[in-house]
Figure 1 (cartoon, rainbow over the protein chains, first blue to last red):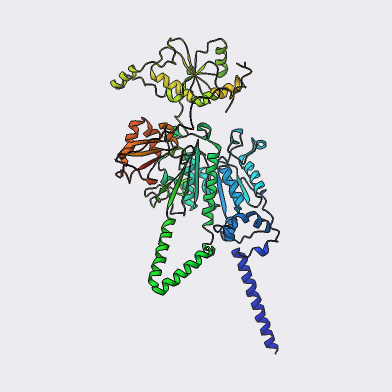
Figure 2: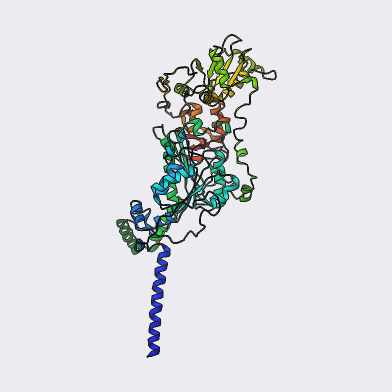
Amino acid sequence: MEKFSLGSENLDLRKRIAELEKELAGYRSGAHTASNGADAAHPQSSDDSSEAPASSVQDDDDARPVKLDLDEFRRYGRQMIMTEVGLDGQLQLKRSKVLLIGAGGLGCPAAAYLAGAGIGTIGIVDHDLVEPSNLHRQIMHAVDRIGTPKVTSIITSLNNINPYPRYVAHNYALSAENAIDTLDRYDLVLDCTDSPQTRYMISDACVLLGKPLVSASALRSDGQLVVLNNPPGEGPCYRCVFPRPPPPESVLSCGEGGVLGPVVGAMGVLMATEALKVLLAKADRKRRRKPAHLAVAENSKATAASDEKDTHAQDVKMKGKKEEGAEERKFYMTIYSAFSDTPFKTIRMFGKRKTCQACSPGATITKESMKNGSLDYVAFCGGRGAGKYPALTKDEVIEVQEYQKLREKNEGGVLIDVRDDVQYGMCSLENSINVPLATILTLPIAAAGEGRNDEAEEAKAVPIPSWLPRDTSTPIYFICRLGNDSRLAVQRLKRSGLVRGNAIKDVNGGLWEWSRKVDKSFPIY
Amino acid sequence: MRPEASRVWGSRPSHENEIWGSQEYTMATNDTFTVLYFAAASTYTGKSSDVVPGPMPVSKLFGYLEGKYPGIRKKVLSSCALAVNLTYVDLVEDADKDIENGDEVGIIPPVSSG
């Protein structure tokens, strides 16, 4: 009896252990969360967000157990009840670590929606400070945070939206040397930067690390959106789409070219959507239910087919599967032209470029070549605007205060403002005339001895533009917004050979310097 | 010195530069195809589209546009992606492919700002 009793107790204990193990497995898969809602899972503090690239993100397993507390159920309920999300999707988002590079016009809206959606860890890279000119589009920054680092400003706002995610501040500029280490600890990267060199660099790093990349951009009223290296190793990279960088003199920042707030905002919001799509695709699809009426229809169809001929049903099924598989391998780029009647266009892309330097079998770019700095992205993109603006001699430049003195003595000569007519219409100096740089660049170029004859003849045939002084004593001064285009104008007018004798000078630093040093009431924009 | 103390910025009448209606709409005919300009390509040409006599091999298009807009090849087209009927076209691999009449060609310069 004694023995038997012990044996049955043993059995009971084994049963209990099996039960507990099952429960534990449930916790691990995250499916057993509802009963744990009462656990005081406090939002993770962002105090520990570090500026150092190392050890700021946990290197934990992708499949680590996560659970939702009651507040999170209420918070995420609206998206969780969607078939595309569900509990598994939400847990997947919470497990995910997303890096946003850039806390500007794209990064702000993208981060806001990703934080709201409950991404577990959100890292943000930016080395800039908040400026007043950011606020019309960079919606996570605020007036009282002007002059503070963008990363701390954006994290302040994100915490107000959702305190649950862990926010990691990377308050430094991304470089080829630190890109691999910075990106490595995240699952997905969003390129919210503003220059060609960072776009190629981030794309290369994502290819090398096998991370999907959501890339978008905006300027003026145009935007582009593309998901790259997705799935990793299959999808095209930035180099596949744009193998040749744009010439540096044609690259405009939002500060130079302008941008409409909601245009860049729309691209940022679309980035967040694409990021959620990439992350949710990782959640277990099998658990996703079909709508009941479709499930029934399919079942009856399958039964009917199997009644007739098993092989036929198999064929249909196989065909369906094949098509689904093929669909997954399609890649698209969305382009947005806000002022067009049909603002959105989606271009179908092909996979990787066979000759791609970064992602083809013959790729030459390696982690080592990135880390040791032997890859020069600035040089690849044609230099840092080097040669974009000519260097002038001392005689070709006049300081703003000096020029103001000449104006007071009525010796200001002809002041030519080379900004475009829109900017000239915003504000201009008295007695200045507006000849946009684009017009000046169309002037003929004087044939200099070795020039071909027909060119020289052409130059002779061009009449002298009405805005040039007819006498040879009136000096000509060029001014623009920041003092760069005016230098081009000086150089270009000299090359035209249309001016003989007149002094041609650049007002150094342009209207920006004018406003700072001569007339503080003149707008800076 | 303040040239004009009572100056109010923004009160100046704006120039008649119609950014809202700057797009030119042109109809393609039976022996033409349409070229759509995006971003910097639209800025350079000053329009959103052109009608071009076709058919024309892909490799000839940039030369044709250079003739129409001198300088565009170096300043804009050199880095552009090209799409024919919303499908990406590789400038090297698809160089001999014909752009047919009625096609819609997109000139897509990389936008890198943000």
